[in-house]
Length: 261
Image 1 (cartoon, rainbow, N blue to C red):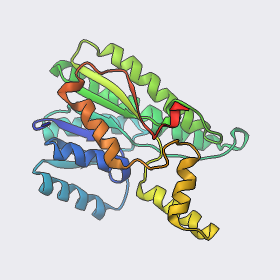
Image 2: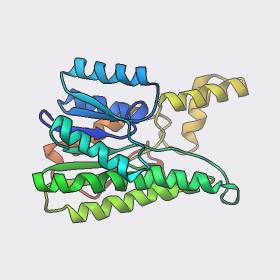
Image 3: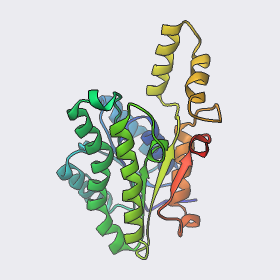
């Protein structure tokens, strides 16, 4: 599959799942707009290495996804510097856990703003151009928690359920415009952040990282195995392919059987 000539914007792509998706799209030939927070030197190294390794153009947009104006400017940057925007992956997200009565209001607002409203803001800015061109792919990274719930994750679960609904509405609106809109729902994904949590649990409990991995995954998934950013990226590549031309409005689970139970 070749995405040569396409321009892809991946929010939250300076690490983890987003970085994995951006790299996979670049390997397929797409020019990349990186977005996310982190050390400036590390982000520049990622941008330069991606451009060099895959022979694509790569730029960085430091948009705050919770701000509509920033999202609009990010999409405009893709158009002005790379000539357009063909693929939008809404991946940026944050998490916080507490019982509802103890959940800080400011954390609720922040999670809804970044995890849900940010995807709307980016789509609001991007869809008109995709429709005018007659081709586009929007991929919203939801979660197993977009389909089922867990305690102490009220804002995250609400936002990820909202992403599923937003995806369906956009898919219907774009159904005959050459633009598909789909969601990917990961279960446990072994990112550097999750690995740190596992290592901390192992240290606290006097166990091995492997033991803690097994405990963590088996709490939710019948398959006692983490997905990787590469697994999520492979799903995104499929949804960008010609073979997925008529696949729209779906929630594609990559979760080791989490929501099958």
